[in-house]
Image: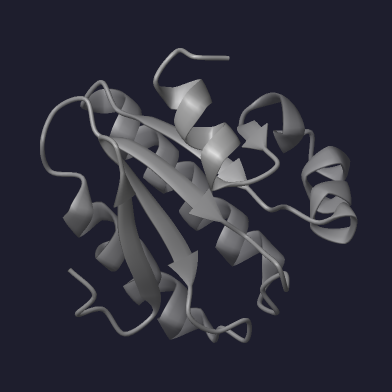
Length: 121
């Protein structure tokens, strides 16, 4: 399942757990990242836990945030759900400053994200 350039993927129950392979992302990488993540979620009701840690991504935050919004919206259109996990304090402060902390669901780690996505929390 791990034939991706920018992400590593595992499954916990029926949830795709996605981790970035590298912290430094160029703008073209962010575009490709979106394609790689969305390629996982073609079936209705896809559940995705995306780790932004342990090292936060170094990238153009506005472009990265826009890609996260696009991923969330694409999942929601197909009755899917997204939880962001392992978001450190510096990265979370960016979500707060942009008011996006109200638009995303956050979890401490993959186990908590999977529990939330499966209605166990």
